[in-house]
Image (cartoon, rainbow, N blue to C red; front, side, top):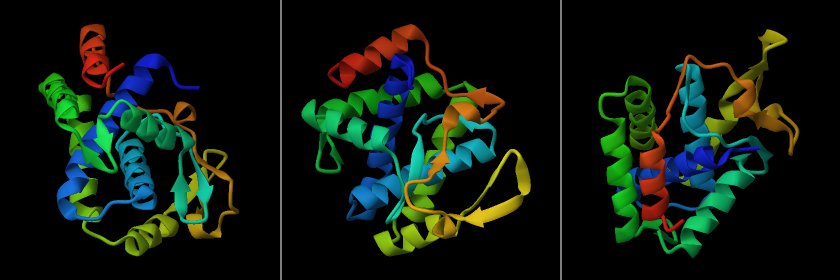
Length: 186
């Protein structure tokens, strides 16, 4: 279960991802889920924890109920309209970017979001879903045995962040977390 500060970080990163993806055209729930999954997976590959979303195998790739709930919450707080970031939410994005400056793990996490959005956001939903379904996963018990997501049974858990060891984590001071919560309407 995510802690309150992790939820704040997840929502701020989600706003940033929406902001990065918006210029690339049409965004929908499936595409957003796949983008966030690829971001989180890339972060773990680099030994960084940013997002804290658990993902499971869904009919259209990876799906996180926590991500879906955070998006709905941001919509209720009028920080996101459909998939567009509101003017109020841009303050949270600016605060996130400013607080990340000079903090290596935070800068790397935001850089991964930027790289994934630049590479995958221009793709249509089918192409990005195919990219996700081609990802091969393994377990710590059998790291040499890899299985493509497309070959994993539906509703199987794909990613559990708190079980993955990392070298660093995107962390924000309590004062910044408080300002982010206020900027996001919480």
